[in-house]
View 1 (cartoon, rainbow, N blue to C red):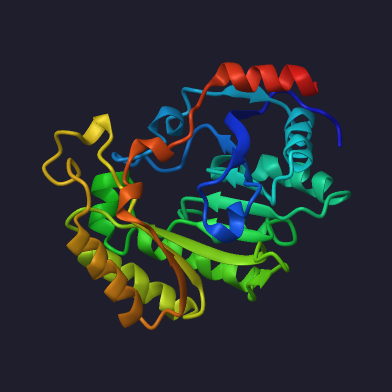
View 2: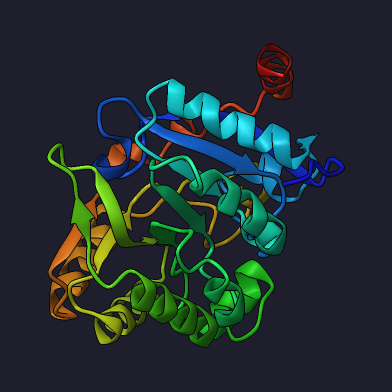
Length: 280
């Protein structure tokens, strides 16, 4: 593979220990946070990078070197966070990496992706980790600025499950292949959550679902009449009940104490620049 111009923009590379247990394990998930996102969520908890303003430009060879660095550090996987706007440019990088590395690739995305793009990842993404944010398209339009979210995410996640129909774990409980779908419980959006969980059960009731309670108001929505507060314990309990009512069998829950900015990574570009200098 020929090295190209600096065509990717990334904001953080490092071991992350706050993913689902079967991804973080004991050593951590090897996260590569890409700048930019195909959604514009008003409440985005990674708002420092999601608008694409904070990041460092790298080329394909530098990106491959960062993958290799994470593997040497003991990462259980290479976790590509918000990679969707870079999908087509990532394909040759992932193909090259796969030639000589066995570590799983995690595709950690918003769920708002085309089936055509997901098909490009066949044989390259070992674990799909999409969000399914909305069953209520009105909320999707109001909060994230997109139309038709429910059907687009449903189709994309269905294709992910087609590619990875079985959830495979190693002897230490680390997922090697499969699908985990995340859903962030939002304030005053119980019916939205119920619709998401019913839709996931229609795709496959054995899907692993990560039901997240970690919502907190970012500065952008601090004064919002709904998004300006945390999720209540009752709202999260309703979401847990909806999980079982939907007939889902596998999943992860979160402690409400996780609803804090303390769990958001530090996006220090100077640290990333120093790392690139070291491994370059």
